Amino acid sequence: MTTDTAVMALLQEAGERFVRPRFRALADGDIAEKSPGDWVTIADREAETFLESALRGVRPDLPVVGEEAVAADASVLDVLYPGGSCWLVDPVDGTANFVRGDPAYGMAVALVERGEAVASWIWQPEFGVAWQAQAGAGTYRNGERVRVGTTAPTVAELRGVFHTRFFPAEQHAVMESLPVPYRRTLGNLNSACDYPALIEGSIDFICWGRILPWDHAPGSLLLAEAGGVSRRLDGTDYQADATGLGTLAATTHEAWELARGTWPFD
Image (tube, rainbow, N blue to C red; front, top):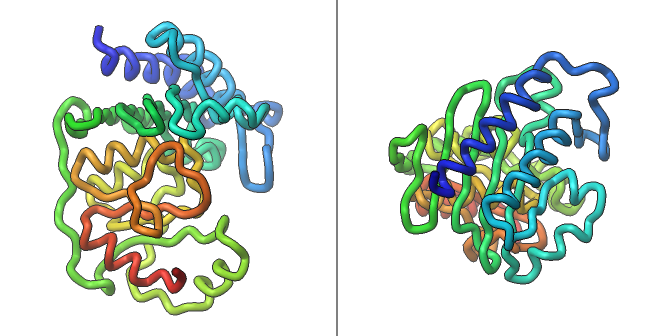
């Protein structure tokens, strides 16, 4: 079994054993709030524990950085900065959706070498869709190679959103007060579904304030290998070891430039 198929098989096993049995079946004690609006469930924790152990078996030389491990001990993330190599794991991306019983959630893994994602996997358990990408080798949806499509040629026709919650308060206030020149489309509110949505063409761009590596490294590689664009707001390419705020993903270079042109800050 190749690494590609092994990692996807592990995600699917974790989904079937620890995640899907809890979907729409969570007890009150199965849910906790790490911070306002940031949820964790027993499914997140059990799936991450399984994946951490299993991924060490695939590449024993690499540390595993999981979202819940970092929530418990922020120093776990230190191995990534700067230019580090590791596995990144998001056991349930879209936990708020999962808690609500919304099937738009996913599970994600990225292989990072010297600060860059070189392979990534996203499994969408309720939709039965497997996404895989390898640097230089393209993006695959359920085993078939996929590419982004074309994008509407004007700002007014663009579908997308700037998620400004985690930007500085003054920037958030300005963005909330300005008229929206594009067709505001919220997406699925999680990266494991929104990066695939960009590839599939149901949305043209999304900007996130927080750039947590387990959220963006898997999907950014999927998008880039499908012909899309994932860059910081200063125009530099997104990397897994990026710090600070703000990344803008779009279906095409043209869509990225149009969307970036609506951001009123340097």
